[in-house]
Image (tube, rainbow, N blue to C red; front, side, top):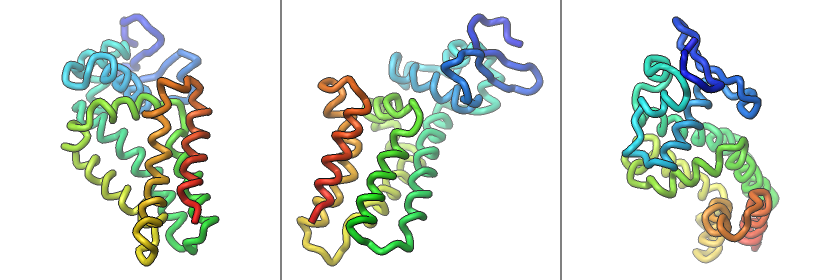
Length: 206
C-alpha cells in the first residue's frame, strides 16, 4: 500500500487503484484516474500537468498510473472513446428504425441522457472547451467528429428542404449548448439539461 496520505491506495504487485472515499463508490481505477486527471487539466492546464502530478494527487506511485495510462494523451483518448462507445450504442439502436418524428425525439432524449450520465459531464465539457487544439490533434477526436456526422444523419433526411435539415441538425448542438451558454446563468445542472432538451425538441419539430 502507498505511504502517501489520502483515501486512495495502491496494492503493490497488482497496480490497482482504489478509493475509500464514499463519493467514489463504484468508481474503478480507470475512472478514478480520469476524474483526477480532468480536475488537474482544468485547474492547472493540460500542458502544465504531468503524469507525476496526477499520480501524486491520486496518492499512488507513477508505476501504478503508467500501468493504466502510459501518457496524458492516453487519458484524453480514453475519455473520448468512452463517449464514442455510448453514441455508437445509440446509433445501433436507431439503425433499423423508421425516421419518424417520434423516433427522432426519442433519439435526442437518449443522446442527452447518455451525455449527462454520471457526474463527470461538467468536467469533460470544460476540458473540451479549453483544450480544442489537443482534442483536434488526437485520432480519437477525429473519430468523434466523424461519429457526430452520423448522428446528424439520423436527424436530418437528405431529401428534406435545407432549412429543415439545418434546424434538425441544430437540435443535437442545443443539447451541448445548454452547458456552455447557461452555465453562468443557471447553477442548477438539471435545469440546464431540461432547458437544452426542450430547445432541442422544438428544433426537431416540423
